[in-house]
Image 1 (cartoon, each protein chain N blue to C red):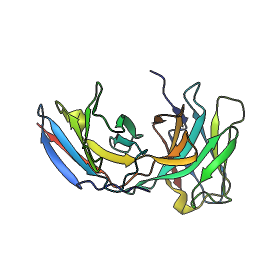
Image 2: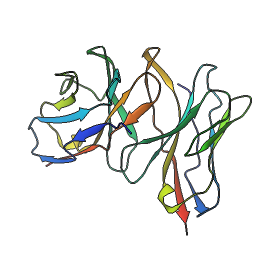
Image 3: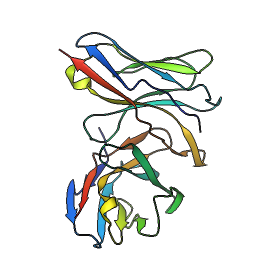
Image 4: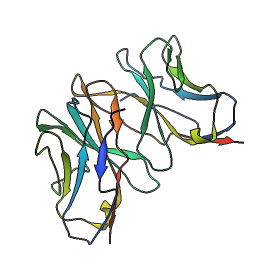
Length: 111
Length: 114
C-alpha cells in the first residue's frame, strides 16, 4: 500500500541551526501538507502546498519556515533558525484531493 | 469551522464492539465527517469518512444521523492494537475545493482492555 515516508525519523539540533525535514508523498498525489504536534498537545496544521505554491498557512508558519518541492518527488520543510519551542513531531501528509494520508513523522528536538 | 465534541476517554473490552460518539451540530451540508486515529504519537491514520450515508470499510463502520449533527464510529471487534486516540474531524474547505485542511481536536482516548 502506498505510503508517505519521512526522514529523518528523529533529529536533534542546536538552537539557531537550520533544519530540513524531508518527505516523499504518495506518488500521483497533488496536495501536500505539513502538520506538527508538540508533545502532549494537539496535531496542528502548518501549511498546505499545491501546484508548486503555498495554498494556505497557519499563524505558526512564520518567516522561519519554508516549504519546497525541489524535484517532483520530495517535499521539504525548512526551519531557518530553530528555537526551543520548535521541538515537536512534524508530520508530512499528502492527498489526491480526497483523503489525506500522513507519514510517521519526524521528531525534532531543539537543544 | 464546524466544531466536534467527543468524550475525553473510554474503555472497551477486547473482542467487543467499540462505539465512539461525536457531535458536530454546526456541520454544513457539504462538509464531510472524517475519522482518524493516532497510536502512541505515530502519524494520524485514516479510518473512514462519510457525508450522509452510513459507511463501512475493513477497519470500521460510520453511522451518521439523519440530521447529520452527530455520528458514531464503530470498531466491530476491538483488539488491543486498537488502543489509540480517535479523532472525529469535520473537513474544512481550503483554498480550492480539493485543497482542505484537517483541524484536530483532543480526540477520544480509547483503551482496549483484555
